[in-house]
Image (cartoon, rainbow, N blue to C red; front, top):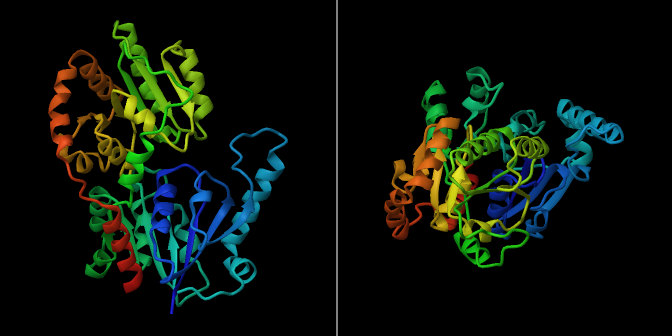
Length: 381
């Protein structure tokens, strides 16, 4: 008998959690599970990567509406009302959309779907949660609210810091046993192969160092801080380029800031690309300017491609960079980013020791291990 699994996520847009979910599904054996993937919105760059045997369902069709243009508002309001209605009256969703199907496991692929899965009318299903963010940094997540995650049968977390947070909130041993740390399933072979492809729409300038940063353009990622530091360093007569790869609801704001700072000649916002790795490969430094993270998957990609790394001290960073053996960890502030980039520009030799470490570094988290760990959890629920 195949286990019947319902997975909930908002869409398959270009975020770390979405990519990790699709990588997991691509490596799951088809003969063991029957998977329904329910999206709130049928959109996202990773949709084509979902294996054919996974049944993709959705509440609404179309791309995400990130603007408030008058002509888009009715559609946006309709979607919000419809999705809120189904959240409030889940029996309607399970009866109409899911045709009263009985699932063995209901799986929230991100923390934002806590209530949708907990409020399921299926009382017999096991509930599984996957947390990719350090929720102590996300507004609205009070200790009381975070304790509600213990209503799940198992909670998978992706870093030591998140695990420690939940262990400190646990009321007893049973609750502690619900928390498991799983490294994100990521495909190193795919990263190395894709990095060999040519760079398009961007000219690297070999006469000055280029700092690359890749991620969804949200305030969390701190691209505004990165641009302000870039300006400061240029003013000090330290020439370099900054390349930001990614898209997101804050894209226009950051682009506007770039123009206001007068750095359009030296800073580029490339937008989304489904293959950022050739850009990674050609850049001199990888910079993570985030205000907070869960476990920044992007550093795993930078490590795989043996990049010189500068990263703010957010959740997951010291774990991934082995407490600063594999890259430079800076204070989580604009000054921290400034000091890190300044060191890269004025004393690049200080990065040689990281290169020595990276050369012989073996990833502790392989794709197979991660997928097997998650399958074990699913099989034992």
